[in-house]
Length: 196
Image 1: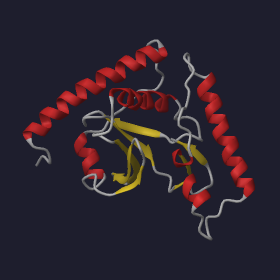
Image 2: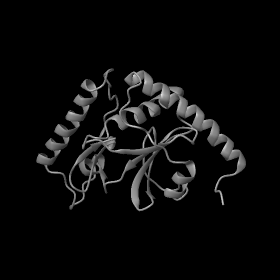
Image 3: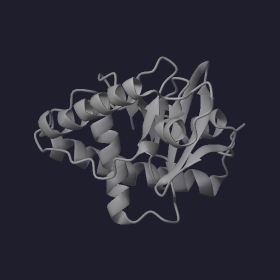
Image 4: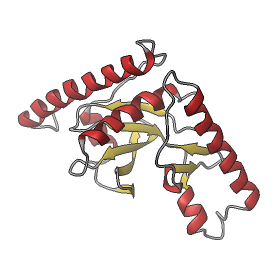
């Protein structure tokens, strides 16, 4: 039995065509039609099921929500943009995020984009979940068992600098990461720094 009503199915179809068209245009513009990594997508039903009806977010930022979920037996993080606050410029940013993140998923210091979902009003991104903690929490709200010593902080800074340098040099059009903040950096359970 389908979770979605008929009018929701029509909205999904329209959103998929609009978002998919914009994604394809950005891929062609960014990489002259030579995008190396195919971008797979989940259905809206998959995302709703995986996140328990998109109910409990684990982090909120000015751009959207981050949800924990499970697709099959694989834990994931789902990034959903604020529908009421997103403007056309930020929607284009969501499409850019998908394009650029998919091209960088081979780097160990970037959150791996597993897939996206184009069936919502705004694209939804599905990342790996490596049992992680935001750098913000480690720096500003340290508890006794997760205090980040100076040597680790230096390693975090070096790893993020490497990713930023890669963004500037690896693409035909240099990519500028404008809003680098501690809440966009995750330190996984093995101490590996990941930018998302």
